Length: 234
Image (cartoon, rainbow, N blue to C red; front, side, top):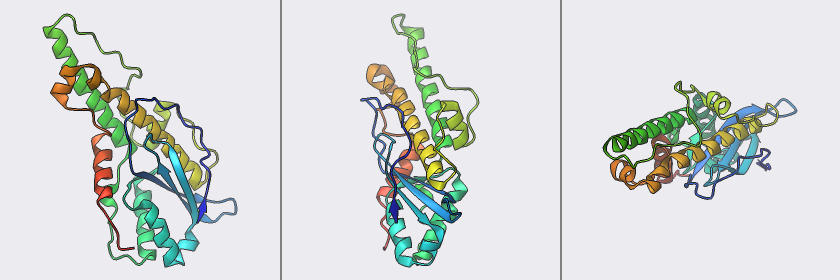
């Protein structure tokens, strides 16, 4: 396997950002010589890429050892990709090449950035409802002032979230570039979620109504928790 440098320039990370543990991006593409490749990008607690691997499809299809080594990079991590169908295609092929009998082991570890964005929007609406109710009862409650406003129409996929956030694509059209793009989107989503949940720290009545700040949006957090408990016979 070839470990590559992280080629993208991420967004600045706020000191107060919450923890986004145990996630990985997988992507498909071609290298400069036209060989089919996959990219595996690990994501840090702040949603930034920390480790990256690129491997040709032929190398893992012809070597169970290589396939197993790649699966160890996915094991115990929540998984996402430029498109959900890519996860089944890539991880399914790796699982077969590695000789693992546990088909579909990864499916409860999958999350979609577009779904995460929708969850952030719903959480913001819940917070706004609590604040408006409080304002109706007490005149000294200040209105919310979000650092970033969200649209009424939700993006359908990773590309929609990327466009909405104004995030640049990874350089080129390779698997690595696609993985970098998704990793940048994840980092932005972590920041957006943190901005949202921090309201609970500043307004105790919001925390009383909606609970303590959570590390991640529900679907992402569920994928992380499921992944952390899944150990494969490698």
